[in-house]
Length: 127
Image (cartoon, rainbow, N blue to C red):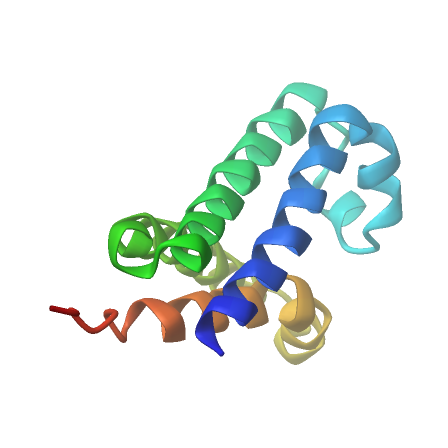
């Protein structure tokens, strides 16, 4: 089950990363909360797109070969969790923290929670 979850999450995050890399301005306008962070910066959007592609790669590696890919999954979960922590901080410092948290749940917090849940259970060794 974890492998299926990992491959679905890898697909979603990989598609997001590709959109950020190759259709950054469209992505910037398509994600409702992104314009609230400031003006469009194509370099920054592409940088984060690469981070999402690497994260997707770690999840895909885990889905393909759990024992070998588990360290990459841990790193992917680390990025997603720290990214979510930044969003928690920003929401807490804002004027409507619950609104911000609800807005970011599906795209930021849920992927982090899923990846972290997968990473906290190392794959069993087989003889």
